[in-house]
Amino acid sequence: IFDYFPSEVTMPASIDSYICVCGAKKAGKSSLIAVLQNQKEEPKPTVGLDYAYARRTRPGSIKEVANIYEIGGCVDEYIPIVVTEERLESKRVLFVIVVDLSTPTDAVAELIAWFE
Image (cartoon, rainbow, N blue to C red; front, side, top):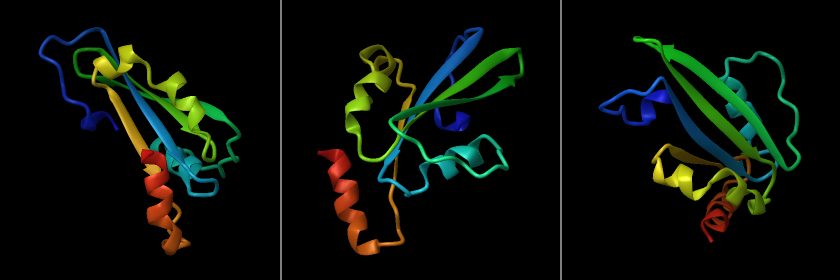
């Protein structure tokens, strides 16, 4: 997660990054987030908007926090809550669209729906 975002010239005491994970129900969003957090338990289904975080400390005591927002199902009305103008300007926002490949014929249509 952390290596995706470019390092800055003058490092602040802490760095916040924002990840928005979205996709259809049962696509694997919660499972992906559980892997990112090294969790072993079975993830629970997400209803609406869910929040998680991952953190680490870089050399020099620089704290990095990845704020992970999961949008349950195809409820794109939550995107403006997660993606604010300030966060976009910081260039520390990452969108992850998870597509269920158990039905490959629907995958492209599902992906296009998130871009509309």
